[in-house]
Structure formats: structure tokens, C-alpha cells
Length: 275
Image 1 (spheres, rainbow, N blue to C red):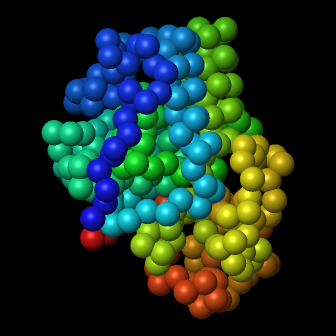
Image 2: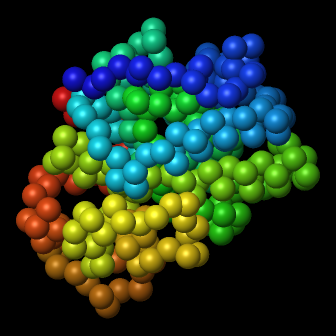
């Protein structure tokens, strides 16, 4: 049984939270907002990021979780899709199932979609409200050099103005550098955004990665975690051009680390419940 949150947003210095709770406002939206100007200003975003960053910085690089838990794959700024998933599978609120089911998101929260700001703000606000029940790990789009090219930077500027938008983009990317990289459920099910590439032989290699870490300074282990793709081959193929190593289905990592199941974001189009 997942433990209910004994710590909530009152533990963090957020003077705005009682009068204007972002997660409550966003969860009440049934469809993405028509108005393009973002509803939070820089001060509120700073408070939200500061509070969430304090939580992430206190967590290990590999977070240990318990079932029951729901696992979500790529969101990519599709706030409407996130709302539909919450509507169909349950939402993380006291009126729903947050007291007995944890939520795990596997990265790629921004870029491509039209509402990256709403998507990441909601997830951060939920993390602050339910720090022991809502869990976020990093994807390959949680990096400034990537989301500068694929939409998040321009969305911030278009919706908040150039000065505030660029500041917001930088602040959220600094927070991304603190995100955990892997979740381990019941010490058996290992979850990450990318995969287990050629460079990863032991879980300790991941646990030893120090944060904050920017993508450009990351090791090959970090690149494999965030960029590896699955393949039906049962061996590593080093001949194809790739951003990350191809992930072999038969991997000695599971034998050596005694893990029994692997979940990564491209195999998770809908929430996966683990009980």
C-alpha cells in the first residue's frame, strides 16, 4: 500500500498557495485554455519552482517507490490529453485516489504540444502538494539545448513576453537539472525515460550520478538513460546511427541486479497500474 502524504504544501514557503493553488485551478480545466496568455506570473513560477526544487534536491537519483502506482509516459505539452487521462483513470487529488495510489511520470513534459506551461506547472504543483505520492523523473526534453529547439522556449516567449518568457524558460530548466533519473518500484520494477544502454551494468552507476546535472555535462550513462530506444533484437547493435544505444531485450543488467521488469516511456502510451 502506498503511504499517504504526511507532508504537503504547507511545509514549503509559498505565500500564494492558499489564495491561488495552481493544481486546483488546472485540474478544474476540462480542456486546454483558449486564452494564450499564461495565468501565472514570474513571481508565482519562481515560488512554484523553488518549492518543487527543494523536494527534488532532497530525493535520490534513483527513487524507491511502492505499489499501487500509476505510470504515465510522454506528455509533451498535451495538457488536454493529460486531463483526459486523469478523467478516465483517476486524478491525483484528495477527492480521487491520491490517498492510496501513487503517480509516476516518466519525463518529456514539455515541447511539441501547445500547453507545455500548463502541463509542467500542474505536475510541479501536484508534486508540492503531494510530495510522497506524485513522482517525476527526467526525460530527454527536460534539457535546455533540446527544448530550445522543439517548442518550449518559444511557447514561454509567446505566452509571457520576451523578458518574462526567457526568464521562465531558464528557471524551469534549472529545476529540470534536479529531477531524479530512475524509479524503482518494490525493488523489482525499474522505470526510466530511455533505457539501459551498453554503458549500464549496475544500478549503482545510476545512483552515483550527482545532481544537479546539465545534459551537456552528462556521462554516457546519462545519455543511455534518457535516449536509448527499444528494439526487438536480443543483442546490442552498434552499427546503426543513434542518439542513444539500442536497448536489447535480453540484458545482463536484470540478471546482475535481480530486477524483474522494465518500464520506459515509449512503451507507456496509457497509464500502467501496478498493484
